[in-house]
Length: 117
Image 1 (cartoon, rainbow, N blue to C red):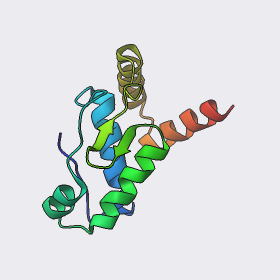
Image 2: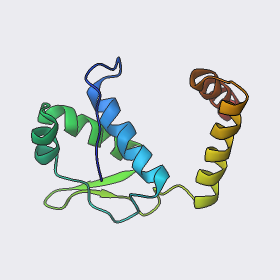
Image 3: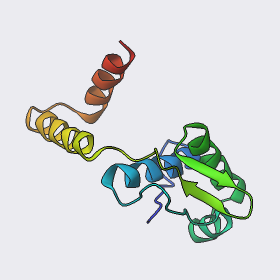
Image 4: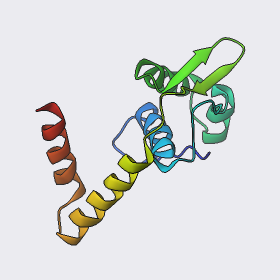
């Protein structure tokens, strides 16, 4: 698994880290039971503060995506995976939006509105 950040992004680094984990889940690269790299290891590799990584991990824990256990680290929850059919449908939706010239922010707004309806 490769956690990615973009220092030039307007998003806080902890949100980028959490989004990277969510993305790996959606792709199927991460599955329930997989262990995430230790916070210190991620912080050293990305040259960020360890508290930034811990904040990302805590956010993922609060969302039910990972379990944090002392001595065991961060482990992807068994229920965290995205069903394959849903991931396929999302890919089709994005492809359709691209072909229709719909920008990503517009598509995300549409999805949020529908989700909250």
